[in-house]
Amino acid sequence: AQSVTQLGSHVSVSEGALVLLRCNYSSSVPPYLFWYVQYPNQGLQLLLKYTSAATLVKGINGFEAEFKKSETSFHLTKPSAHMSDAAEYFCAVTWGGATNKLIFGTGTLLAVQP
Amino acid sequence: EPEVTQTPSHQVTQMGQEVILRCVPISNHLYFYWYRQILGQKVEFLVSFYNNEISEKSEIFDDQFSVERPDGSNFTLKIRSTKLEDSAMYFCATKRPAGAGELFFGEGSRLTVL
Image (cartoon, rainbow over all chains, first blue to last red; front, side, top):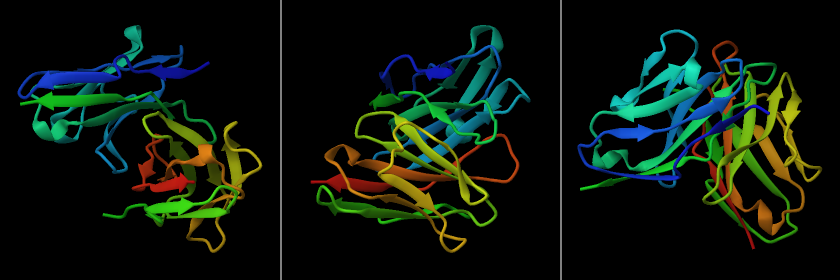
């Protein structure tokens, strides 16, 4: 079955450190890939998306992600964490089709330590 | 910037009661979705709706659930007889007519069933 996996339900980094949140999908057909961020008690905000154009995608708030077909991965990175980055991050995929529904990973809660 | 709006933001109800959650989608969007997120868990797909009919539903979306777009603007999710396990955050999402599957989410409606 097609699925998406996020390794690490909790990630803690120091302010100013590199942020790396992992996402892998399971399918021989590359999907469209997305990262969403959820701040406490808020909805889901799109950070960035991969739609088969450039493999390195830049998003909002200094985040970027690289699509690697050989590794079936779409890891999210940010060179320098800020306190305001503390949130839950969800990787999501769709293979299109009639409904274009998104399938979400289990999420990674990012904590940023001062 | 246009956004998806949801009401109510929080509803508390007694088990067995009917609940209607409402969503006003972005005006030129044609695909509509409901997702739910039980506290601390992943975002789960419930149903997608296009051209005034359900295009796909998950196993969660049983006979107790229904969706409709009664007046061409609001998109509603009805739970006929709520159960304790229906307590969750419910997100409405919409998608443009074309585009690579990007969904725009509302802020969510938190349902608490007592």
